[in-house]
Image 1 (cartoon, rainbow, N blue to C red):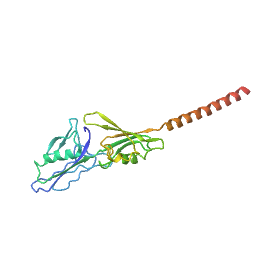
Image 2 (image 1 turned 180 degrees about the vertical axis):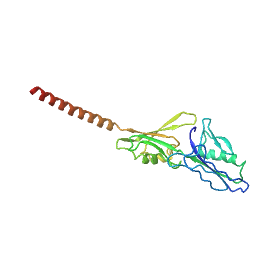
Image 3 (image 1 turned 90 degrees about the vertical axis):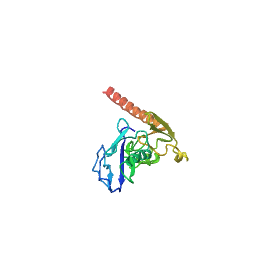
Image 4 (image 1 turned 30 degrees about the vertical axis):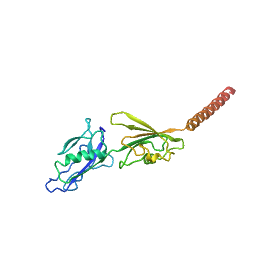
Length: 217
């Protein structure tokens, strides 16, 4: 999608090729060239380095030029780039992966937030584990996953973590920018209301005591 950052590795042993290295068009660290000719965007500790998918859905790679990748999987993007690379290099190999594969987890988890994953093969269970798992008030049978579509729309999925068939579900493996929301059980609302009632009662008792003491003077 637009604004994704991709790590694109191109390797060849063609002796006719000149040595080339590039850091991509988004830099977060030093680039490392491996092989006779290579594009090796480096991934920094906190800033992703690689090739930004621009507003037109293109990636601009040195020598090869602009390539339309919006809407493609990383596997499909690899094939498209491979076809373009074959015009310049002999026996080249291409690898494409996300440099900023992010998942958002919020709601009834211990550590809600945005998590950048080290790889793309991440399950919903992995994401919830990174977020510290559900709290005692989290609904395991009704977790909401919202997924971005290439056309800009969003698709919601309701997930029952207790379902034994969850591993075969289309949402088990997460995608870039998936949003996970864990809903709270009614028990939390009841507990919160009870706590508020308790505090109000205590405050009322203290206020009554102050009034009684004041009137006795």
